[in-house]
Length: 125
Image (cartoon, rainbow, N blue to C red; front, side, top):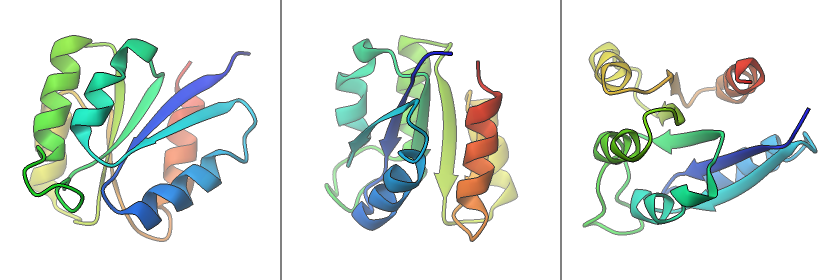
C-alpha cells in the first residue's frame, strides 16, 4: 500500500494544523497545507490523492476565491480529484451544492469531523 498525498486547504490556521497533526499520525499520509485555494491550484501537478477543502476561504486573503469556486477549478483541471468539502456550517443546501459540483463528501467541522475524514480517506484507494 502506497502513500496518500493529502492537501489541506483551510484559511483557519489552527484548524489546518490540528487536521494535519491528526492525519500525520498515519505514516502513509503525506500532508501539504495551503491557506488559500489558489495556492492549492498551483500545486495540483503534485497529484494529491485527497483534497480537504474549506467551504469558506477568505480569512488569509479577502480577495481569495471561496471553496465552491476552488472546487469548480479543481474539477476543471482534473475531474478525478477526490475533494472533501469541510465547513463550519451544517447546511443541507450547501452540502448538496458541493456534491453536485463534484465533492466526494461534505463534512461539518464538529467533534466527529476528524473521524469522518479518516473513514472517507480510508475508503479511497
